[in-house]
Length: 184
Image (cartoon, rainbow, N blue to C red):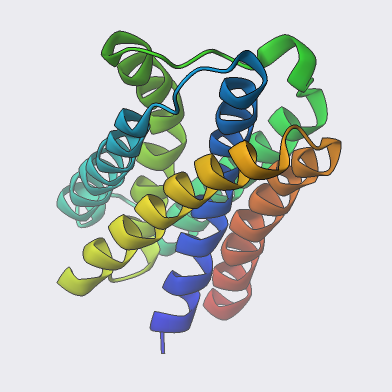
């Protein structure tokens, strides 16, 4: 029963990875620089952060003095609202980063990893993720990053891509609201 919810959550998070990859691909096209396929490594960081949040939540879930499901849904909702707020405040002309070396890939992955950590933390408190779920999120992330790079290189900078950040945040928040409604 929870598998469709996990797929929806993972797709919403991957959509948030697709958009920055698109911007990176389009910037490299505009500058005539080779695409950094090293950016696909950021998918590994995202999954590691998600797993760290998930397993720490599973460890502490029994020690919470109240319903862990409500706390998990609240954390996921806050993460979704944070993503929505970031999408509203995002200006691609100011915040597109040229990702051209391992240090920049690491820093970009680290900054995005906090969203994945908190999404994993909330998920660990309210949804059981099977082992195949981690392979699924990894597959979605790699697909999102690589297809974003290729799409950005092929189609260039499009202002409509900015709305994908908003859709990602709304999707994450929708998973949280669904969990809250099912708990009551």
